[in-house]
Length: 464
Image (cartoon, rainbow, N blue to C red; front, side, top):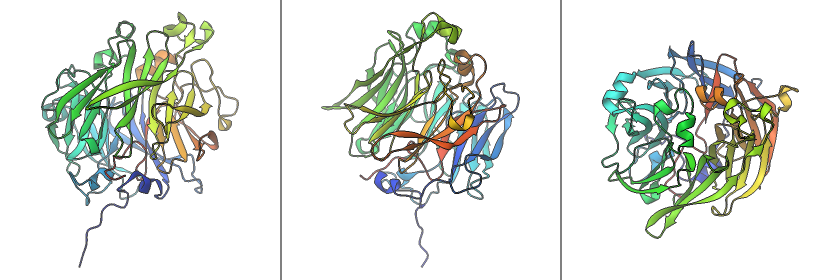
């Protein structure tokens, strides 16, 4: 008798995912900031036993120019095993790769050859706008009911942004997710607590305030996003807003606890208008409501004005600019990218209200220009930006580009792309993997990383 078996990369619990086979390739969004040649999906060999370790082994060009590939995700993941919306026989096979600037969505098939993905379908911007009611697709998460795509703007490129759903097998757009959005206007990231029937969303800004770079008047006016929104996952209705205050600008990356019995998570605020510091906040259940508390504050570093871009000269300091965070699958370590200073920080968050700094590595940075053993004495620019953690928690990967127009505001000489790997100690501590340094092709810059078989920010789990 024939039996269907679930995809072997679906895991009931984060603990089981943590003991799964190691990744051998990483997929990296790679964009041309000049918008003259097509963006690409780059495939990087991350197998230390391979002759190609630390090299780009293939590059898949998109059919158009000017997409600005940014964040992307799998069509299916471990949430397919959840009892509330099971899809156990779907495959983790396709990468859903949007263009943040173009609103075009590319579907790439990794199954025939994981080292050479192929474009299976392209959804054009007009179709996305018409069927979803949204544009500027940003975050892609596989989850209950399908693929959730968090978008920054409506069909006209204005407020409100929100979430739309795609079918995880046909990739047809089903439509807008929200039934009642309440006061939510701005959008950025979205994730959930499956065990608590709760969706969480965060805020950035509208395309006019970032597509040509950050707008100083909007930033200093406290008009970028600074709130979290909590939704009922089943009724799709807005339930609560938590405001961090207008001084805490750019509330970005959502990292809920992987253990579905735990009702907390972490989010970063990129910059404080008070003192240029960055902060990490823990959201948590407080009685029958959600609340948030600042648990980490990273100060700005004084710097010689001659080393600073025009945007920062008057301040005489480098803000940390925490632009990404990642939480290990065992919920023990939080990794924090400080794109301004060049630090990648590791915190023990076993107690989510009392993080302890356990490791730090510095590469790049606006003033520091810290180098890497494999880059010789060459000063590096950019800094830790998109960070990804392996399922077993022992490897940390990051790239150095934030967003084309914003890169050029802070690294005015032009940003040279790179990708590095760190080794993470079982009980804390970070070390640079000395022989892993991917010097990115000069025509492109690297952004988000996805790992073969899933990673620390791709999957949701329904069992502890």
